[in-house]
Image (cartoon, rainbow, N blue to C red; front, top):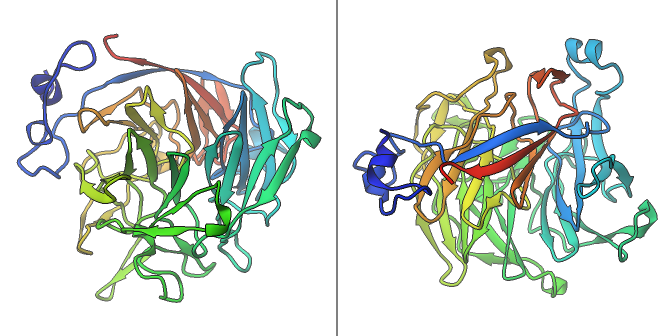
Length: 416
């Protein structure tokens, strides 16, 4: 019997348990035992119009929308198997799929108004999808502009959809994460990108915005002229490629990675972030949670990863060789991240955070290693688009490195 099951009856009937009981002696240390709490039955959805990674979006009504992204042009095997599906380049394309219609295909919607890019981050408020930031390989490399997508009534043609400009971000950033609470949009973390060295989280490329990857802001979309307001920064490690989700008046910031790190003359590259935090939107105070069970991160930035207003779902990811701690010190990676195909260099873990028990659990492994797929939870379903896989087969079909993969999972609670 696992340590988690010894201290609490899971959804099938266990209660109680605490952070200290679940792990070692350190209340912030990783759990010794991590139980499976969710079952995911995976199936293939309608393939994407092309392969890509690092888009973002969400649901507007019954329509699942994805905006922007990047495709590397495909590996040799990708183009042999699926010629023409993996054109290289950054995207400003936007597609939508009506999930209520069984035979619906992906429809092209009006292009994103800004420059083509990946690493955008989105939030849904009412019937508007807010999209900001991102990066590309041409100047200015990183972006602070944003736009909102909406549609007129129940229109079904692309002309019924429109984009509107939004207040600019506090500074240029990519791969931040947003969450909505009380109708307000909260923005946390993110990196600058300069096209040369890479990503920066300790400060922007000019060194002006210190600890930019720990900053927290809020915007009231009903009062756009007031712009972004600064809130207390997270005491933890500055980060990007993390998740931020809202449950019952609390924001949960989990996982991520640092920018390119050089410390005391030693080059570390990108490092995992394992310290996780909770922010109370009323008291505006941060509280540290338990560290991630395995030192993996790169979790989806998503308009919703919450299941049943309780479980935060975090599929895929990547494990770096080094961890950066909140005090800036470093340590080696710990634990073993799961892989479907070790040659991919990526992972197929599926971690779950139970916000009622303050414990990590797992769901069924992904059928392919995948880093940062666009992921949205809605009702009893999880939808995953694109990502970074190293190439491989899913349920008998081949998908490339930046895949044309649309994966759908039906979620259920173990023992229910």
